[in-house]
Image (cartoon, rainbow, N blue to C red; front, side, top):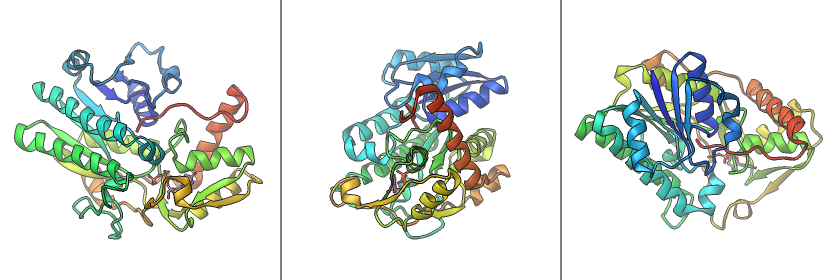
Length: 335
Ligand code: UDP
């Protein structure tokens, strides 16, 4: 099989590429390196099965050629990370909405299967835990920048599902819940790489808000397994499917856990949301996926324990600091 991965030099894209190449599939990566990095794919570049293009989706001619040659398209290119979204809302909305539109339009000509990545952010501040795919989405006002991410990805979902309904383009929409693992950068605000990096440097770990908010962290290997299985499942076409781990932890406990597992002497500091992000910033207090649908479709549930995930991320940063010297932040990462 020949896979086209947009955002292929990002965190999730590079792990997917690695897995596909390992099993002997051909992989074509398209990435404009806006948040991805060649560093993420350096170890893959020698593979004869890999082709990569450091270019944008908006290069329509290239996109048309790559889509033509592909059997399946995995659309991961997006603006992600709450910090990036709050700081660059125009870029977020334009990248997410225009990018997905171009992919669907190109794929539709030859009716190529598109798996497109959405996000648990679309559930917004719903308190209807665990989040089921058919539940209502509860977003805040348009004056609060954070919600533009959820709205842009929800629009992507509508568009993808409409292409399926109206034009019979086979699509699968996955809602990813806090995917984490080696090569994820902390640069765009993601909590785990930031906590681990601070812990390894013995510098303060900063918790935004009260720290009582919860998240469920999914090992990127599990995310990839879920995606691969869904792409092989006929019944997943035209569906929206959560992909996440259900082990829930408060951010405060996550900080404690990271400190403990890295034997760090970091202090823990609390920073109000309006300083961490922007005045009036709204966070969601709990975010837990229901993965019954994923399991019913594929027989799989992400179950890597958080301790193992934290250890893998710590090992990654330790190795990186040996290569780069201490205190360097990992580069790149599109999800
Ligand atoms: N967070 C934190 N310290 C950080 C980065 C994030 O306390 O250095 C919090 C953030 O406010 C949120 C949670 O950790 O409540 C998860 O943040 P992340 O950006 O990783 O993902 P989100 O689930 O918000 O998309």
